[in-house]
Length: 523
Ligand SMILES: Nc1ncnc2c1ncn2[C@@H]1O[C@H](COP(=O)(O)OP(=O)(O)OP(=O)(O)O)[C@@H](O)[C@H]1O
Ligand SMILES: [Mg+2]
Ligand SMILES: [Zn+2]
Image (cartoon, rainbow, N blue to C red):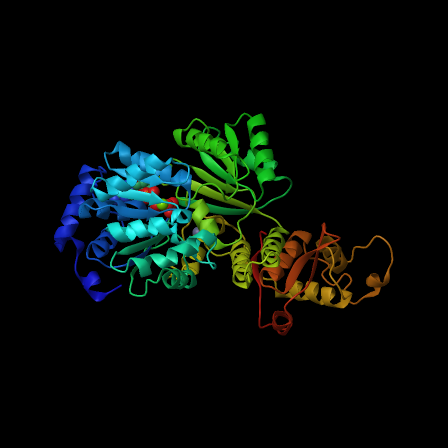
């Protein structure tokens, strides 16, 4: 942030007075929230801006208001058609002249939109990134919009959690339209991703605003799943039957099954995923937004930027594979500021699955995914850890730790924190001596001294070495080893998960005692 922006209070700028008037007259809000005024002021003074504001923090107004102040149309790039049509409708209802251009429109309808832009009869033009064909870019160069806003800008970063190749095309905008201020917006970008967004969009001189990622009305909880996801979710929701919420699943099939299970139990639920036709998806989204359907069971295809105020819970039946994705998804709860909850189920095997999917992507020709793999491990370290969840999120996004939240599972947990380096060393030395990957249960049985028959492994030094430890704790410790990259899961005969040693340096650090693990004794 530049010094002049820091020292000058927004109230002193005349352009901001116009912005405030519009905030009240068009949108009906009294005051700007968080960094909104700073972002809008920087845009109005002609700067490029990169703004990281929390989910539900009001990023949309950061471009909608400048467009109205400048009285010249602004271009908004947004990744999802559903998101755009939602915003366009809401804006039209407030008397704002917003339009969307996409391939489903006829030639005439498109021409009418361009004419409106030319004649000064348009305030906001929403475009999907794939719509930036050469002739569209030509027109933009001729018409010189007042602003280019790139919503969900993390989609441009291959290091972010939701990379969309079509976002790469946005890199040419700054070159073609050097004098038009560009505003890149996202809720979730760590320092590396922010740097990547700047480079990809050529925003070298952009002012950066990073608001706290905090969402104080959210209570966060991580629960090891025992048994089926459906059972866990039904049990969890039994006490809040009428509430609106989103349940995330890792697969399309999973969403269908879980939605059916919830419906059978008397919940109002529908599945949502990319395998459904566009019209079914739109219908289900509308039913959810209007409150007709209470629960959407979705893959990550659902939810980005969706503005439903009263979502009371977000449940992850399967965990996401980075903290950024988690924060983006859980951030869809409680946008009205009232208490809301995020419950994330996880299990041994989830991290292995996430890593295998990334490897598959590499095999299909995607660039090296090691950054993403490390993000998945980092996320599971947080999941398995015993620190306040809110502090964990702040730390991840590079903020100071601040106070504990007092209401997450870890803040509420009873039990002491114990050093569990020793059982980790026992498990790892068993795996080392067994000389090849093993199933988790086999390995744990081995260190507990349980064996069905007599074979050579029962005569090994590590057989029964961890007698006296709880099997549950050993499972947790094994997961810690995986999250720290000491072991890695693979599939035996393409279906049986087994774990094998992975990173020798980390293994040595664990044996030396330089790498130590702690866990809550109540685990
Ligand atoms: N200054 C304000 N005062 C009161 N309400 C506001 C203000 N600014 C925005 N809002 C409201 O906050 C809600 C969330 O806004 P918006 O959809 O722009 O969030 P977002 O930052 O884009 O979130 P996401 O990251 O999920 O896309 C909307 O209902 C919006 O009208
Ligand atoms: Mg948004
Ligand atoms: Zn906490």
